[in-house]
Amino acid sequence: MNPSQRIQLNYGISLFALLLSTVWLYWTGLNSIFLLDDHPTLSTLSNISFSNFWISTLQFMAEGHAGGLGRPISLFTFALQYQSWPYDAWAFKYINLMIHLLNGCLIFWLLLQIGRISKLAEQKILLITTLVTAIWLVHPLNVTTVLYSAQRMTQLSTLFTLVGLVTYLVGKQWLRQKKYLKGYLLTSIAIGLGGLFATLSKENGVLLLLYILVLEITILRALSKPPYWKIWKTLFIFLPLSLLIGYLIYKIPYFITSYEYYGFSLQERLLTESGILLNYIAKILLLRPTEFGLFYDDYPLSRDLFTPISTLFSVIIIIGGFVISLLARKRYPLLALGILWFLAGHTLESMPIPLVLYFEHRNYLPMLGILFLIVYIISQGVPKMQTNTLRYGLIGLITLWLSFFPFITWSENQLWANPVKQAIVWAKEHPTSRYAQSHAANLLEAIGDYQAVARSHTYMMQVFPNDIGPHMFRIELACKYPEMTIDDFQPFFDAFQYKKIDIATIASLQVIFEEKTRNHCHLPDDVIERILTILINNQSNIVFHYALHELLAKLYAQQQDYQLALEALDRSLALYDQTTLRFTKIIWLMLTGQRDKAIAYLQKTREQWSLIKLQIYQPQLNALEKQLTVEFK
Image (cartoon, rainbow, N blue to C red; front, side):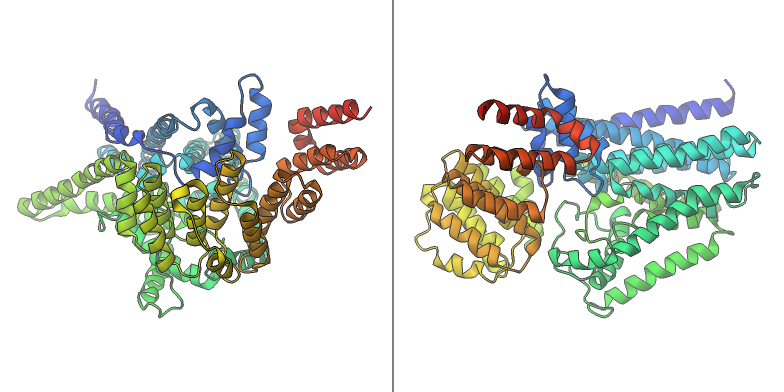
């Protein structure tokens, strides 16, 4: 074995040790719970059965409310674990951890390729690659991505993006070797299939195109261009990017309307995101080592360039970094690569699309650019130190800095393994976060500390006086627990006429109806009906009205008043066409003896649905049609 092979073997062993260390760091945290988006994303896994696995899985994927494209690949991986829902969160998080390790291996491979294309010395390539991969694997900013079950979507999108990037660079090497057919075929597959699978896992998989563009204008820029390169690049990179940009421009009016749901404008979002990007970088570099978590809905908005004044500096730094990177990409391609990679990775979720402002998991792949940039600068700077004292002193500081990453990740995992303590800590750290306070209240309720729940409810009503959610949470408690009875509902009725409807309002109402269905709710029907009627007349956030009409329909159905139930159901369907509600309507028409209307609506459903959807739901449609035929002979 020659010295070069021995070095490579040593770094290979180091990577394996890193993977094992990552498993050890995360092992305790796997014993955490489902939370937030896990429940709406995974709840219908209970409909999947072994005897009818493929049909029920396709229905789960078709009805997934995970994003604009449905994210079917991610949902399919969840469906494979249907037997673990809803009691075995460990199983979901374990798979997430395995995907994280696989992504770490792909990052190692990608960085090796980048280093070799950049013609760095082999030992330096291995050192940079190993250090960057090590930090990425154990970085505390990735804890929420790995341990938050629903964020498997981010992990899978990253997985296919990395596969696409690695494949693309292999194809580029073949093109350099004048293997044109193989090279063009592989680069085309990298973008086509890699981008497709990444996007069907989560929509920001389309950023594969931007990552490739960043590579092309930095480290790949100096490579010789094969024949027909301009034509291929136009068809496979610039044309898809132009279509994406055109689509986003076309959707801007819709985006602007949707901002009503979030409580801020497009301008405020863009300004605020500039500060958030700098906040992300500070966390990546561990400049804020105690500020990791899940809830950031309390992040302060930037109303304009000067409110707060830090917004102006954030905008200057972000735009300046982008411009400088573009100008310096020829002379300093690896430095430009690091900055542009980070910015490219945040293009969708930090731009005009109306989304929650801040989530740590958005850095899962983008942070690779910042980590690479820092490690590369260190690798260049340390050997140039004039004296051993300076050199060893700097190495000592770097070693100390690196040691903080696994330590903080270990601490975060200990917190995730204790959900009640975690909820209380997050609530204290984010006293004005709706999500943090609601999550803490739910956990306190689960352990039966109703006095603490009542205090939390009172606090939320004071901190969020304009939102209906905290008030509805109090009514939810009265529904579930006799000791939490409300003597006078009138103040709630009055508040519901003008306060803002939010997602927490709908969540509490859905819990109330679940309790009502099990005959465990202590609220009279007329109170629930009055609440729904008032909220339907409240125009503060009409995006939720489809759910209010649906709940009102279910209430009428429980009262056996199917005529009113059908009218409310039609209003819900007119606002948001749901498959399950179509089946519900057919059944209610059957129950009221309206055979002709039931058959007509069933036929209308067949005509309106796509061939794929018809195939997925054919068993239910056939069963209903058969039942209509048999019962009304």
